[in-house]
Amino acid sequence: MDMGDARQIIAQRAAREINDGMIVNLGIGIPSLVPDYLDPSLNVFFQAENGILGMGPTPKQNADGNLSNAAGYPVTLLKGGSYFDSAVAFGMIRRGCVDVSILGALQVSAAGDLANWIVPGKRVPGVGGAMELAYGAKNLIALMTHCEKDGQPKIVEKCTLPVTTYHCVKKIITDLAVFSIVGGTLRLDELMPGATLPEVQEKTGAKFILVNSVR
Amino acid sequence: MPSFNKVTDLSTIRPLFFDGMTLLFGGFGGVGSPPGLVDCLIESGVKNVHLVGNDAGFPWIGMGKFICLERATSLIASHIGSNPIAGELMNQGKLQVEFSPQGILVERIRSGGVGLNGFLTEIGMGTKLEYNKPRVKIGEKEFMYEAPITGDVSIVYAKKADTFGNLVFDKTARNTNPYVAMAGKITIVEADEIVEMGELNPEEIIVPGIYVKHIVPSKGYNWKWIWEMPDKSSRNAPPAK
Image (cartoon, rainbow over all chains, first blue to last red; front, top):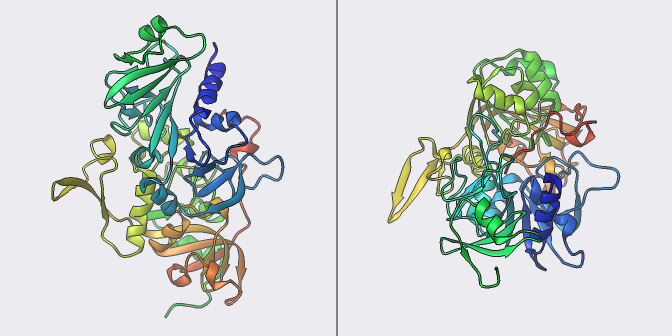
């Protein structure tokens, strides 16, 4: 499976976590692909931390430089949507008004620690709004390919990269599996199509328990 | 007495920038950053500037244009991922970067802008972003103290201003601009449209003109957005959140 396919498969699975009536914040990277797989009959409001509740799809024409998502790409506003400043945007995030936050990750530990803001000396993206989304969102889902390009597992006992927020991730979706973190324990809930349990065991850098349905 | 006509031109603005100043700037990925004032800052020749803003823009967008000239000494921001040159300068020790969680950063600016003394939070505690911030125990619970931020000069971008400096913003170009406007000792506004007093609907004014010192007319954005570039990936590492 190439990287592009893996990202699409992860996004497609993540879309199933979104239910009717939810307020959802999507991070940059794989999470931004999730709306492509969302059932259009659902009523969902996407919140963008640059000041939109009710963000709509990319405009087909007449893109507006003053109406973008948090990555800087043009979007639209749905009926009932609103604009607000950055303080209000994060006020609603910290206060717990966002039902689910779906973030990209570099590493996640078995205890749900999220690392996604820096690879020291290499990538220095910065923390953006991740700490506050992790703090306030009712449910935090981390999306990532299961391993680094060199095969290193990204699900680990303890993060080696600087941590964004401790004990915050509730679910991990990769191209090989879906895990939950329940009471500080990593649990394999689902194998993705084509993945096998021995493969997931080999490529996961942390101990996990199984739900009965996974064999 | 505040002036009731604050409209001026860039030749009045240029001497207001000075070496070593703390400059607060509005904008989110360049959206809502004042293009004419960024160019005016570049032309002013100032150096050793301490910048505070949401992010480092893109190398050719927003405050990113100034950061790439290596005339900023420090930057307090939530992310710099969209400006790889800022990352290189940081790794080379040429730009001191303090990362602040995005909403915490805007609250620090807000705190400075409304005459408060900072606030307590548990966000970021125990991570590298705690830096040396003081911890405060109240009852059994421990918090981290976040200090207010004010600027020598603030630059903001508005859709409309009246001559007193009452401001109206546009969609996601509002972002940090209202609080940046409130937290500067000298706040300079670049506005797409400038109208007479009485022409704005008072119910729609987001920032009252009391915070505004100078207003200059805008010629609009003078950069291409990332989505207008022929090769969207070549100079762009997407920001993490």
